[in-house]
Length: 298
Image (cartoon, rainbow, N blue to C red; front, side, top):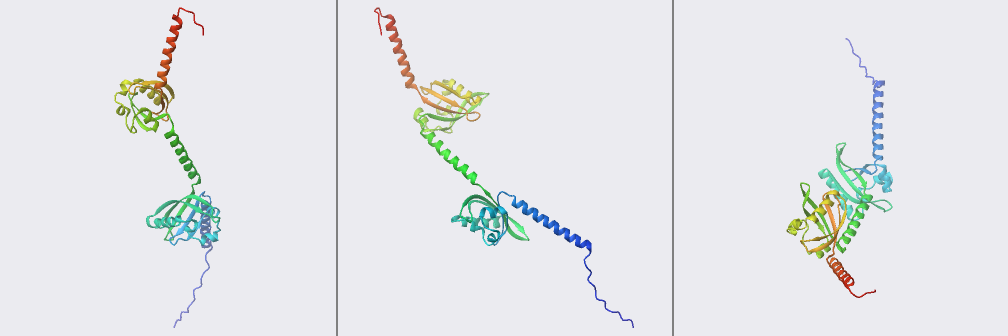
């Protein structure tokens, strides 16, 4: 009887080619990780990766620099720990929104370890990491933008105060042309002095031919002057008698943008009358001097 002896299988050592392939894969993965780390660390803003439990999984060096916390400290903190007051709950709500809807953003003050505050725009997007939902986001420093917005608000307040309190009448208008000829213009903004001097009210958004019927025919020169300023962009100063208002105006007009003009004006009717009266008086006095038979010495 033939007896077949059992021969235990001997585990062969991995082939050199398999070892080389595994080593190469490890090197590639390491290079990819290093590249990703370098890319994240080169970002000017804050990068963060958060799981659905509110734990930090990853962040860039800038996050550590701005926050003032070490890597070990950040790993023990939650996202809301970097905010104060009502903004804590706002940030928590935005994080919930990301996991529910896929994306969200918010502006808030980022509070560092030394309690310094910096305004940031935070964005977040839901991503899948190892089949688990996570939040990947960025924080962009908006200090400069906030400064510009503040200066613009202050500038607008200054302009509005000047605009409302200036003694000159002010009108900002858009000229309407037909075949290159000015036909009408629309009041876009006027100040209180405009209404006080002209007596015209509720003109914003309306055409001048609607506000003052017949003005185009009665005051064609005024249309010509405003139309030239709006067309050429060259400012002009002039005095004109507006027939439809029966008033003399001293006007300074300039063009802030194509087909628009600003008119800053004063009513000078009384000054013109006084000048005319003075001329008449001088002419009469001159006639008396010239026609006198006796010698006159002044």
